[in-house]
Length: 273
Image 1 (tube, helix red, strand yellow):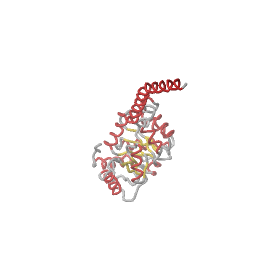
Image 2 (tube, one colour):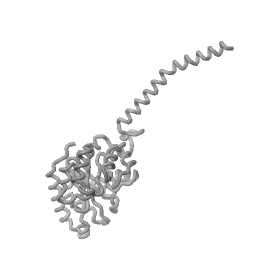
Image 3 (cartoon, helix red, strand yellow):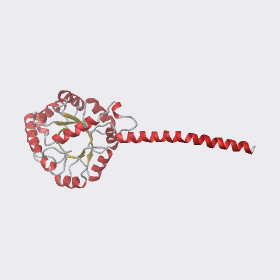
């Protein structure tokens, strides 16, 4: 009886020894696949096979465009019938990057219309994105980048896993760096902070990996002050799209402001990525 138990024990040990290399090989393969997936920046499903997934090339083309033009026209208005004309006036004045916010009635239709009209010439984004569903709807409409008024980590992560440029709103150095670490390649400084360009200069010097995009506090004639002090790009909202100009249909005024603003931006030159 004891000899039978001894034989069984030996067989068990032998089988375990034989199985160990195969088990180790399988574990090593799984680990390698896992590391490969992590390095690729995707989750469990490759982004290029998903409905909203973009490529490294499209991701970098958006960043290249921000680095080249460095200014985005951001339209936020309750006047649905005037929104298209207001944004057209900004484009006529020289803006090559535009953003429609979801607080504007008919925003997604505007994104779709301008993307169809200017695809490849004007880069079109969508703002006031508050959750993943908002991001999906914006991308379905044709948005080329996603903007948030606050830092929404799950949206930033979702976008980064799919090679989509997201720009979350941040108010402090900690938030700006947290957004960067989460995968946001551009960080929106919103709302404006005391010191403006001086704040941007101090933060960008301490955290040079950031690509700060101030919006509040940026006026028609001062973008160069931000751009020459560490800002990667700027956003123009109220100073460009004055509510009275929109209500009066004074599109020439918006175009003139856009021309002045873009002339100012160009004095800073393109950003070296």
